[in-house]
Length: 83
Image (cartoon, rainbow, N blue to C red; front, top):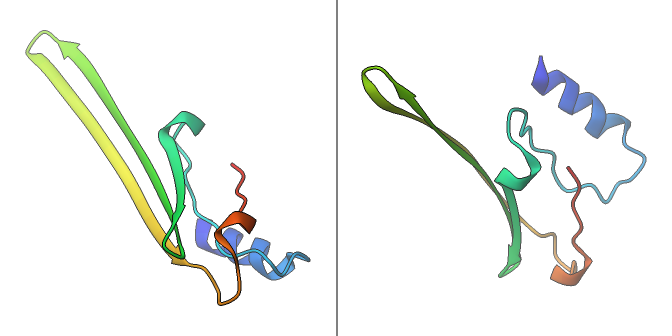
């Protein structure tokens, strides 16, 4: 499962500065926003699709939000992320 895979990555990580992992499978990188403010890292992934059918328009919308507090002593300027 995805959770087991994420746990393996966390447990095998030699970089003990890893704060969090988030599964954003199915989202384009442009759909993912990361902000660092007020001692928190907020990740927002959202995607909307519009389809026109013979019966009209249909919309698909999905989003995921995760917020993680920075550990004490970690500056907001030190935060990096990768997709």
